[in-house]
Image 1 (cartoon, helix red, strand yellow):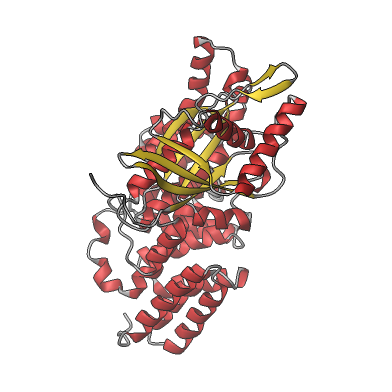
Image 2 (image 1 turned 90 degrees about the horizontal axis):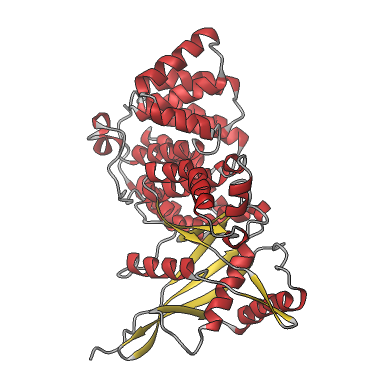
Length: 462
């Protein structure tokens, strides 16, 4: 018989995404209630318990509220951490599979502009995404509301891929108990979900879909949650993340971003830039790091500004690229300053690796919206890809005028200054970037990047 493993139990941070009222807190309480009801009669190979008495107390308080009022608990008003232990049965007895921390987040905080939400994204290893199934069935306009949620998923997945990390999503369809069992209703739900799932599939995003059924049932004078399968997403995430990180320390998006700064990230998929970028890494040296960062930020911006509507996405999926380009060119012939068309066509050319065609279009975009840092980063990336370092650096200056604390602009400009032999300015910029970095691991990565870059012999300016 094998002896129990003595390795340290891994800890995973689980992000939650969903608008206010979607049912995140009810899902959490229902999952806990389902696991508690099975305590002492374990049949599943994996289960979870509270990691400390405070978490158990908080969840029991919510269950007592339901028992007394017969109502679901109100939406959470502040960020609350819930720590759990996922356990499994081995030949020698119970064993801790992993620890996981789930953040119950108010719906209005789940946006990319909130610094607390940004920090949680960067520290996470996986994510629960919540969709209100009842509203999805009764309100056709709800799919447009979900575009923001899909955009967040695509952004997080893109960051993970650029960092060479595997990041998984549990898509949780809440309030299914409000819909009576009916094949017709399931068909309608599937029809409304299909465009959303198609976008995730097109981006090769790793996810699994779950249906959450958590009705309140009255038993005498008490009300109880009759959760069925609601804990499955937690157990699946815990199991899959344990497999992914079985042989090494779990790496969050923040650590992946640090690996990009250190130029050691190994993407899971082949670069989409094509043959034009082959062999550039040896010539770019440390300049390549800055360009990689800019390209990453440009990719991030694509899901923040001018996201495609559901109708546009469906139309584009069916229309050949050549026709789309012709349509955009015709639109620009009528209105050369159409900002949305300029931006879309520039990005289409970038996807086709025709960066020389994308560049002048993005220049026009920035001339109309010079205060948008997202557009400026895309422009800097195109200058880098077209080999115009002077204009690339000039764009970083504009970004730093808008945001003197921009880490990417500071490190990118520092890298270019160092490549030109201006080590004093490069050192100043690296130091500033380290000062404003929000976490100690990121500070350490910037410090290492600076030391490695500045220790290199001064290159000949190209």
